[in-house]
Image (cartoon, rainbow over the protein chains, first blue to last red):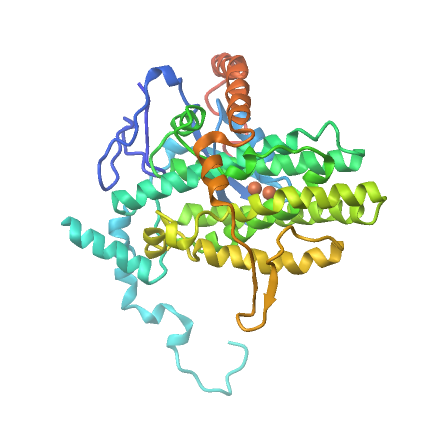
Length: 126
Length: 321
Ligand SMILES: [Fe+2]
Ligand SMILES: [Fe+2]
């Protein structure tokens, strides 16, 4: 069976059902079409000392091929010194409808920011 | 949430310039519109390699060969970024590629014109990539996150494409009479098809309106075309060449160049599949796909064999944690 996902939406079971908003099976294709290789997410560290950053995705048969392809596609102009790849189905994402719950608890806690504290101007280097 | 509330949230995001991301609710028509536009864009990058690929073996020097290969590699990469962006909308890669091969999906008509001589490679870089850049710079601000991000990456890579094309023409324009004539001939043939790349006039465009409301497109076909003409009409002076339009004239009042009528019959003819190379391009793509089947099969077999041999935790997995 062909598994199909909305990007970044891979469910818990890996059963391949589309669980995005409109629950429509967009274009399941026939077996005759063959099968896509697994999808991988590519993360690249542009410079020693910086974080790896999500760059995009690609298909590959396994991790090694994913890294090789990522090198060819995403680092042709010295964009990176290190590559991570992770099979997309292993990424679990928070629900965008619940984004507010990520912000809400922090909203009324201004004292978490340095600017909350009104200190005399004479005070230097703080 | 009822649909009309979801739609309201969606439109509110568009209004406030907040990007739509793959897992956000979006109207079916927005999704469909994006799948069509992004996949066609992807196909254009891929098919676009063919007219130039024709000259890789015949480029006049090793330097030019290396440059042309690098450009073709970039275009393949652009195709990949865009296919990936299409996938984020819930269509599989294979399905998208099948649509190209079956003729269901379109790609930019410009690539259905032949590359007859070396100067054509210069004209393509300068005019065709130049037109693509104008469109793509606008698309960096498109409302769909993955599309916008792909465009930012693409635009970063594109500017060398246009510069190398102009440089090819510049060398020819300073060469022998024969080379000058070659240069002018290429411009004569590529100018009008390049203008057609921006699509039908706003008054005749079927998709523009909704695309603008959803901020998929941020400028109309006519606006983009005018921007392109204003840019090229100035740059052509550096080459000491002319553009094949007797009506091309600076209009001080409009602060834009006026230009002649595009041959829309030709435009629609090529779009409908009757251009000089439509058949040849799709044949080349399907041939490459079919003849590559054994490579894909071998890669899968190899990966499976390696999986059997290897321990489950690959080396390097811990460092990544
Ligand atoms: Fe490109
Ligand atoms: Fe390009």
